[in-house]
Length: 429
Ligand code: EPZ
Image (cartoon, rainbow, N blue to C red; front, side, top):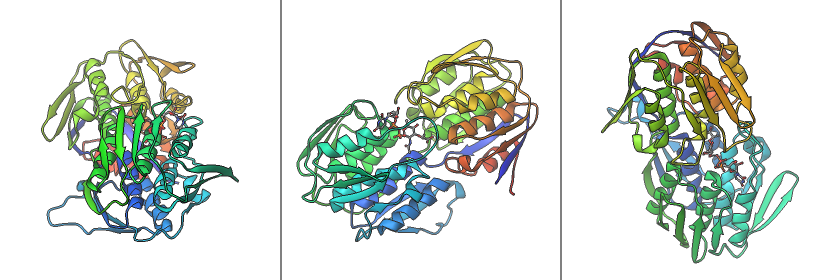
């Protein structure tokens, strides 16, 4: 199992290219199930989750080809995938595959919408809470599907197709919104989705569906109106930049000090997170082609924040913020409101000398004058990266085990940080 070794204490200086967003790339790839024609997706990041999903989609009959490099293209430009599914050969998504990546459960809606049936294993994914799928199922039921649970599988049937309806989501859910949208675009008549997630990745998928011929209004808002179509067609779409990768590297620079240009990053995708970072004392300058982040000398101020759906502070940056607040002046309060068990990084950060008190859903982080390197264990994707950025700021050596979590969501992280002066290496075993 690979490990990552960091010798901390170096400032970060240089440029980090921001990859395409994992959490848009995955549902965009899944959207290719909705049409017989080819969906071309640019700026797909090189990630373990993308590779796994390509295999899962291949199982359903999708032909996935990766276009060769074009002249002048850099590795950081992302890949171009062409996904074509003239016929769906299998409407079952087996346990072995879905258990390894939660987003693969999202094939359920497009399979039912296109084929009238699907059998999909209940999902796995990062261990950050119970993560139910009740809203995914009630959404499909509202559109006329019959749902049964059998042997750990969801079996959905709609032999006469889906019919539009009003769907009021009881909680803001990214996955349930993707699911509702992908079902509604091929349903008969109008669907109104209320309390929809406004995350930029949801809007990115909706914009791609429109290019495929879907009729969707209200994109980016909490109410989506969809007029179903009989079929969708080919389209080309470029995945938006990863706001979580952007926020993570911004916090890394905030921790180590230095000045880094996040090439391709978009400030509008970060909203409250960018404001919060500014309030800690980090210099942030939005430019037409990216974001410059700098901290030269000044200390960091403590903050008080709770995670919220977009445009609020994202749960996917909570672990990284806690790492950053470990070296701020004073005590910060970080409340997690989206997932009930997303504090696995706290005990590992404590091994680096952090002072964090957990009280229910709230972490009280009291800044210390410096962290010290130690051996730690990655527990989930975002927790892992919080250990990386803490290790970069800690004095001495930090060794991080179980880094396969990182490879699910951060493209070439050692290379990107190494080029900015970090002493970081991967030890393969
Ligand atoms: C997406 O997960 C992301 N995953 C997560 O990123 C992210 O943390 C999360 O949205 C919140 O922003 C992808 O996009 C692939 P939700 P998702 O449904 O869709 C509850 C990462 O690290 N809920 O928005 O699974 C749920 O338990 C990952 O990249 C129900 O109760 O999250 C949670 O409390 C981790 N019933 C809340 O809604 C349901 O049927 C929001 O979850 C569905 C969700």
